[in-house]
Image (cartoon, rainbow, N blue to C red; front, side, top):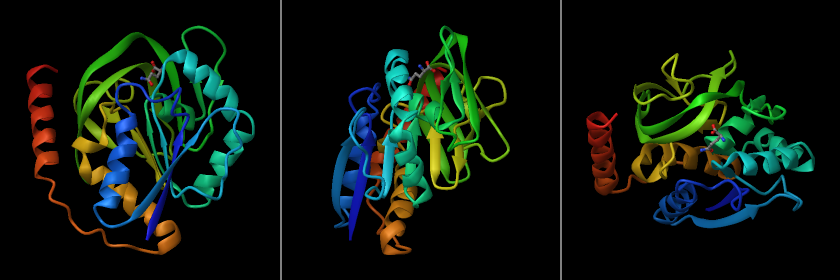
Amino acid sequence: MDLRIAHLYPDLMSIYGDRGNVLALAQRARWRDVAVEVRPYSAGVPFDAEWPDLLFFGGGQDVGQDIVGADLAGPGGDAVRRMVAGGAAALLVCGGYQLFGHEYVPEQGAPIPGLGMLDVRTRAGKKRFVGNLVADTPDGRLVGFENHSGRTYLGPEAKPLGTVVVGHGNNGEDRTEGAVQGRVIGTYSHGSCLPKNPWLADKLLGWALERRHGAVSLRPLDDAEERAASEQAALVARARP
Ligand code: GLN
């Protein structure tokens, strides 16, 4: 079996350790004897929409988000839509999450149209949400940290990834964190998110491998260290919300 991972805009949208999510996905697949190829998809370079099984789209500064938003308004965005329509799974963090929605409205400047692949809308708030993040989800506890001014609000097609226990999550108002729609998952959890949340990594791997190989059963890994990291992060978050 093989796995194809597309890292979207790695040069512009990989802050706060987000690149580590690609490393975690690739390593958890390789530990299961899955051959993995990772390809960068950068602004201004033609995207092969048929290739990826799995997309990763990280967070970035507003200036990077402007450049990426402009690229997604052209053929790059059409290609990403085709990837998702073709069954690719996707993990989006923060800025990448915001740009998968309908729009991101920064504090200054014109709204940045999103891909519309998640039924969410985001507008920048005055106060940045910075700190530890813990959320309960039906598949496990999500731990990480958040750093965003965006307030994201879900429409009826998107379901929350989880419920905030510590931190602010989507908007600091409705206690939702992240969004799930089909095989697309958005979250505000930086850090990298996946090394401390192996259940989420394996969920994405299962979806991605199914695209070309049919339903797969992933061999359980020894996640003692990952669980210890999650527990430590949750303890710190509760002590220093
Ligand atoms: N610029 C966006 C915000 O502040 C995204 C930031 C990020 O990706 N960390 O909400």
